[in-house]
Image (cartoon, rainbow, N blue to C red; front, side, top):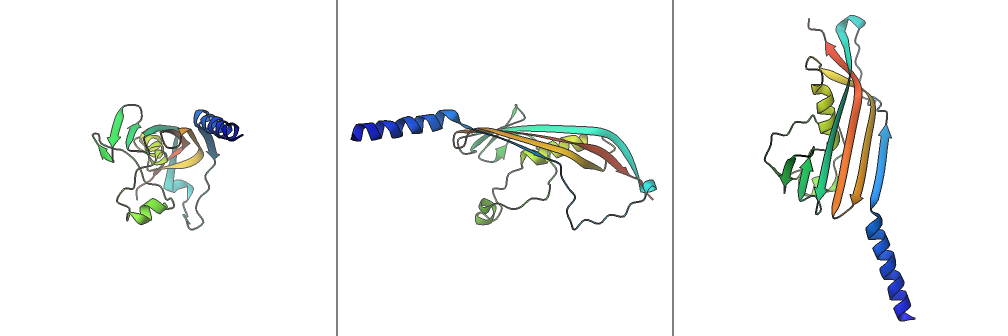
Length: 158
């Protein structure tokens, strides 16, 4: 009887390890409640539709990260120039415990930057849609991909 219980638990553990985890997040962002911009039609120019995507593959609890397929970060040390645009987000518990010393750039920040950089004259991107996909084994390997789409906007100077 004892061997049967141990065998059953071992089989369940193997099934969980082999199955992995996958999730997809789709969103249509809404403007934060505190933003109040009063722009007239003549204050800005609407540019082309833009799209930006970024991927991050994290290995061994995020110690090694491969960003966009070719850039490597080990223990937070990067051998490349990172390009991103910070978006407002809630700080994590790890940020609070380490006083933000180990804050990493999210895949969403890189995707937004790439969407903004797709039109060099743009000052901002009005969000249309956002898709984030995650897959892998939570401790050993996690891959995230984010895609940000919207309309580029250029403010007219006075």
